[in-house]
Image (tube, rainbow, N blue to C red):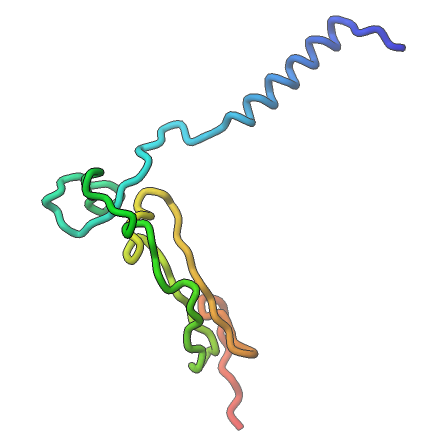
Length: 122
């Protein structure tokens, strides 16, 4: 059995310290927990390009988007439909750095943001 030397002990401490450093990484300057976007400037809090509601005026509906579960019509030229959810239609996403998208495809549909080739006409 190998005897533990002081070099082995120091190396183990260094590896442990580096792994703890990586495990505790986070945003060093979080701005706030939430900032619900609103188009009305009388609330006076301006963050991320949007005015924000006062925290006492925030409701649960500000964090809810109805309709992401509903399939959309894909009967168009590219055979797909994109439902975007951003701070514009879900105000609770403001300052969170999050957006969502639902893509519905028809058989042989394409994703419009990528290269779209014209379909041959017959």
